[in-house]
Length: 284
Image (cartoon, rainbow, N blue to C red; front, top):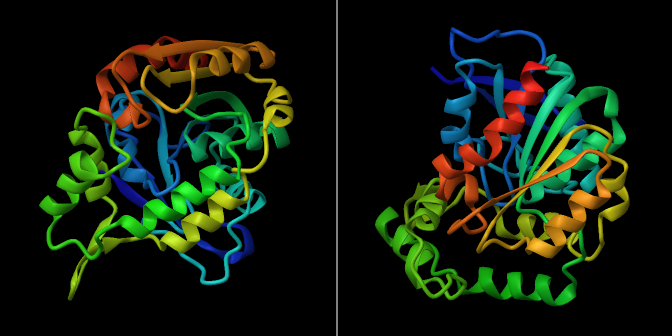
């Protein structure tokens, strides 16, 4: 049974962490911390957590502004705040030296944490996150995308349909998993279904990293690191391989047919790609 653990993050922000650890695995000591991406939540890691939790202490964190964690009106939603929250989770739950598994923005948080506090981190998995700058045009595209959301949605089926097939950002073929992904971050209100996060806060969070490249912090990561990408994801092969080259102890994995939500959309293939690495670092 998944247990909720309450953690106090930076600036006193209340964070919800979710312990997936099964009775067969240790409930204290070093473990795995799973960090979702922008607009995600801890429950998106459930398929991956289920595979880890039988043998390893496995915690997923709802980051500030997301899931069941606090959404402070005035923030901050800076890189420093997200990293400090993750450090607080590792230290207060006694997870170190931790294995960090991050997706998208959560992967950036993970490698910035590993660069800043190498004493806390045993190993790192980066899932579909670029080290290069995305730029102002990308931020404007996101602003326009949020404006196009037909929220409130009349039903969860409408959420699944719009994000899985009707959303202008969906590639040529429908992605039902993408619709399911967004259905998990919706809550019912008197007028319909709306996201549990504030879109304006998501844009603020993204603003703090989208304009900058992050190669310097990546190069400071000293632990074993796996860079994994979906063939149809946002991280290109050339950049992923350059990230591996920059990392002192980098490795590479690729998942055919997967998009940006590789761990959620193709959980079995994701596990096949990352399990040799995770089994090596978690048993060493």
